[in-house]
Length: 450
Ligand code: FCB
Image (tube, rainbow, N blue to C red; front, top):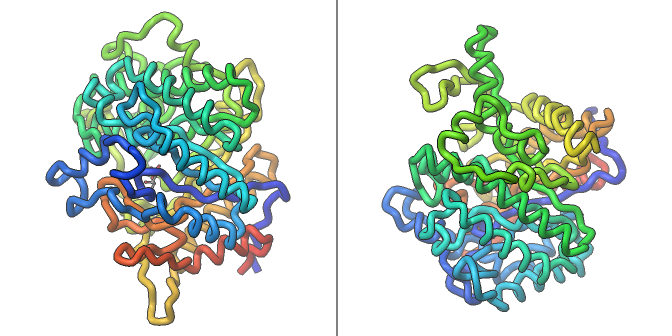
């Protein structure tokens, strides 16, 4: 028999993000965000789909929380929609938006579930994008204003704060590759977005410390763990470059290590950095959140954007085409523990949470009314085995959040990719827990065995 054994106080959570699940985009005084507009662009999102209705969690949150409780999760990671709180991006605060998140948090607390709030998970108010978005320095002040409202209005109900989800996707998918909102393909804009996202995180943490609130605050990165495709020196170097540009460029300044050498030239060529910026970014944080899905081999390619490209792999793939590579999660977590150990004057041993991990498969409700998602269970087993080993061997891994509570709007893929541990029938909004949800319930209860 194999068994997954975790430390007693290991925290179990499940995650979503506002635009992917809430729907109700025209309700409660919400303003427009960049995903509302991006999804109207022909060809931007699969089949022209959007988050207008999504999983309708705005109206169904109490039922969803009941499911979270039934499965035994101790924490819910959700995100706050900026356009619900400050519809124009800056200025007037929308009381109805605040009231919604207060209701959500109160219901979670009533059910004994802790609240983990991400301040920004990609739904930027459109007026801010019209003013240059993450590529324009003015975004930093706007984010500080918004974060202060969140702390002031929700601070008594939030148990853990995350400033920003996946800076990599914001800067590169949104401003370099153009596959996410706002859809730019512009290296200069992307490099500016890198710096401004880092700055936004810094000013938010700084503002938070002034509030006197005690809940921990951190950030969620999706560090890529590029490994060299071959042992050739040029591929090894390519892997280092990839790590510098995709991962260290976000992590290192926040950990007080400045920009990595391999990225500095790109940043300095594009961004008008100001004195004191690096100090602003390097605010001590209370934990590091890591989103992990897969890992890819990297090879040198002088024709590619930054001199590297990703190589084919042999592993089985999920419905996203992402390989199943649990070994990458181990490499990732060990590396993060190592590079964060000397951060902030050697405070060391910063708590780490896996804040997202999961996979998409083509799940269907069968004739028996159940979803037998055996591949997802296999994926969880392999990745949780890594977490269990590391946590028990002393790495400061404190918790794990499955992505996602529900099938939802998977950005440019629309509703075609099902990441949920709970199936959603989008015509009826019926929720059906998949077998993987029961698997996780058993793991949480201490019976992760097979
Ligand atoms: C991550 C995002 C999350 C979800 C998963 C599949 O990059 O944070 O919103 O889309 O990927």
